[in-house]
Every structure is written in structure tokens, then in C-alpha cells.
Image (tube, one colour):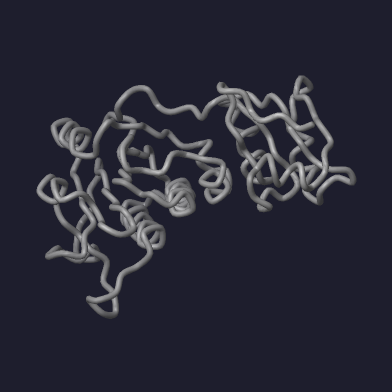
Length: 244
């Protein structure tokens, strides 16, 4: 019988999620579950596994139950909890930040984290309330790249934005309301871009904390998906600052 994870362990599934977890070396894998014959990408995982990891062979149905989805690519693991940054960011070492204000869909969260890694983000800020946690689904959507990011969990978007501003960061708040086009802005580091939730956008009290910006689009009555908008904007800022 397959056992569920203990309280001090977190579910991780999918090849890239587990590969990047092992490459990052920030947390420990306790048990890994797979099938025989091995899934196609098993070698990518097995060559990185420490000798202490307990490998258990189960059925595909067992994997579905463990992951609570069939989207596990034949590999499920239980690891120590995700490692969040404990200290706030500083302008000296963390010049390019993104804050996610109440992103609720774990797949959107993961996709944004993937873009953040690819565009050279120095730090990510998540809010404790109203936001998706970093689940196994979010990790898979990030292709495991969340494991390499510096991610800070803040009590609220406003409080941390105020602190960042006080410490010398420019704050850019994305919104569809009256705002300036991102293509006309000179994004000088250090800065923090605030991305709002899928439905409501950024919190109303965030609109006055920094410069309001928007991405040009074909019609004012439509909008980009939150993760797509994030990828476009982070890429634009990164290229303007020659970070990638």
C-alpha cells in the first residue's frame, strides 16, 4: 500500500520538477516512486539521485493517487519543504524583482516563475494571503525552475512594496487602468514589477505605490493572460537592461 507524505514532506512530480530540485540541492528527497518498466526520462532523474533516496516501484494507478493527477510523467517524489528566502531583498545584490499580488492559479504561478528565471530575475515576492502556494502543480508549470529562484513570502503586497520603495527600488505596477505604456518607459534598476491577479488585477491600494504601466494591446476590452503578460514585460525589461 502506498503511503501519503508526512507533514514535513511535500509532493513533487514530473521529470523536470524533480531534476531541477536535485540540481538545485536546496532540499532533500526522501522517497521517489516510479514504475517498471521505467518511464522514458527515468535516466535524467536517476543519474542525479543521491544514494540515500528510497526508490519504490508502484503501478501507474498508485502514482495517479499519490499525485492526485495523471500529469506526473511516471515519477512522483516526496521532499523536504520548499525553501523560501528569509530576509527581504536588498538593492546591492537583488536589482531586478517581481512581486506577484494574489496570483491564484498554480499553473499561472508556475509559468510566471519560469519566465522569471529565464529573464534573469534576482528575486520573487509572493503574498501570504490570496495567493496560490508553491504546489507540485506550480513547480511542474515552472519546469522545476522555481527551485533555483530566490522567493520571499511577504505578509502583504503593500507593506513589502513600501519597504522596497524606502530602500531605493522603483516600483512599477501593472494595470489596465489609466497608465503609461511599458514600451515608453526607461526601466532603470533597481526595480520591482508588480503583477496582479488573473481576475481583479493588482490590489487597489497598490496603484498609488508606484508608476502604473500597461502593455499595449489590440483592443482596450481585452487583456493578456497574467502569465503571458508577465513573460512579455519581464523580457522587455531584461533586454533593456542587457540582463539576457
